[in-house]
Figure 1 (cartoon, rainbow, N blue to C red):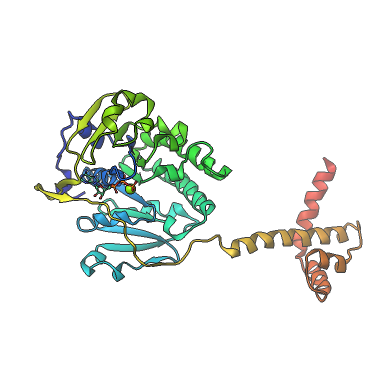
Figure 2: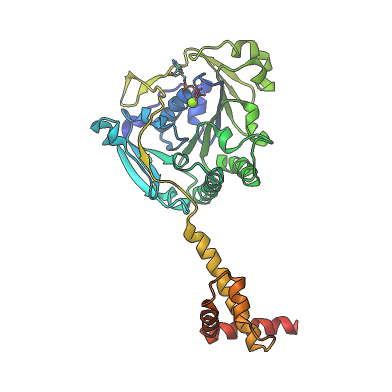
Length: 372
Ligand SMILES: Nc1ncnc2c1ncn2[C@@H]1O[C@H](COP(=O)(O)OP(=O)(O)OP(=O)(O)O)[C@@H](O)[C@H]1O
Ligand SMILES: [Mg+2]
């Protein structure tokens, strides 16, 4: 880590200071639309980076991470075959700050060792798919691999930042299929372990109740922004009259033991890491940047799976023949496979061409079964 980032700029006696310094402690920002959740995440993320944490920022397709660019270089992770054409919109000096890395989204495990501590690691996935199931499958696997990797590398403090966590881990009846509930509960179980591995989740939700219920209690710090009275979580109900009137420049920070700090001003400004006298502004902005590519379940996978079954069926046909169980009617099989008339002889040939060792192997298995 560079020298400049080692400056302690927070007061560890204050709740805010404790929050930044206690690696592995999860943070949840809660607030209505427009209350400044993303702005808060930008600021918190920047400060966590300053205290030396490795940052993984999940972009939810709004590209708000670009607010970091004037200040920190980014490593931008794009799914293979997809691209973001930054040069069409951003100044060359900004584009230069981004290194694009393409990853195989079927193997998110390959991402972990390549995350960079000096730069921000920006993970793009959701921009490139409209299929919720694909997205859930990817994130489920990502959480698995993150856990698998981080438990070998416990010492280094990491932060995974997820704006609108309620998208990935929605509350009951809001998740529309089983896979989604599995992801929610997986995130819940991960959080408990992540803390011990110095891996923190920094997340936001626009409504506490939109978040998977077991997850809600798993955070060490809650940053409350303005929200409607009826959305104020039960344990903070005493402050509801304050919370519903707060401006974007207000925030309440509460830890899991109920200690709280009223922060005013909670600004978009923060101290520049190289010159603590200098302030910089991290203002969220949504970008429309041309992109290309799409993440889709590969047809080859589908074909691959079908191929396995075809092979098994052919082997079975050969066994029927070897064991004299039945005379195989290839015309019938051909129709069963939905193939054109000329294919009966092709099929019979394929069955004959199955290597003898494979057949012997299968017969051995059958023998064992028979003896049992
Ligand atoms: N502390 C602050 N001081 C001044 N302006 C702020 C502050 N926080 C946020 N803003 C401004 O308020 C607006 C909304 O902020 P932001 O996008 O962070 O809200 P949000 O809760 O993420 O909204 P959404 O639900 O739409 O994502 C932005 O224009 C932002 O610049
Ligand atoms: Mg936002």
